[in-house]
Length: 265
Image 1 (cartoon, rainbow, N blue to C red):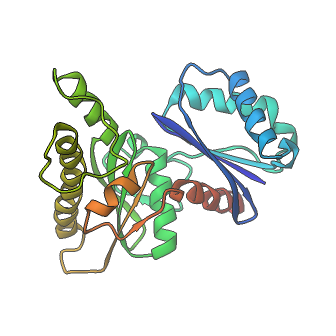
Image 2 (cartoon, rainbow, N blue to C red; image 1 turned 30 degrees about the horizontal axis):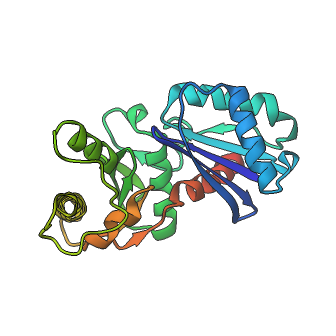
């Protein structure tokens, strides 16, 4: 079995693959203070509840944007899983995937590992010009050419950041739950007005920014696929006309793909 680990700023998403089948996945808060032993205890419990024996895990791959947690995970895998691994632990970086995707940014090492994993996973699936929108702590638009070139993108504050700032920096605006949409665009009360502003506002932002990116990425009207991923993608997708597909497990499937590609080289 392959253990895939995507360490983000807010959450760590992990998955277990049995062959090509995703048989288990977990989404937990990322805590940079966690030690390797604490990570081992946490996942030992999760595996036990899912009736998974860690001895069945013979491969591990990590993509991380949190250096402290990346180090803790590497130590955890070395201490608790290394005896069962058939192939060395893989940690995704711009350096070790340069033969799989061409990174055409000014500073390739600055690009988050998760963004590159998503780009590779999406390109392998569609093999055309792509915009991948990841709704995480930050919202990132990643642009990939039909030639499998990572071209860069945009970064802006995520929904949780915006909602938190809105409630903390205003005297009368509360914390709200946006999982239930407002009945209409014009809010008749404070909560509905906030929900509408966030959901309709971000949906319109996605559409407008996608249109501008399309003009640069596909100046001759070439085909373009727009897909969304991340924990909050399903909340915004209904309010966007440009998002064609939502795949919240894109990064895990990308890690699965990369593990085999890199070890087969």
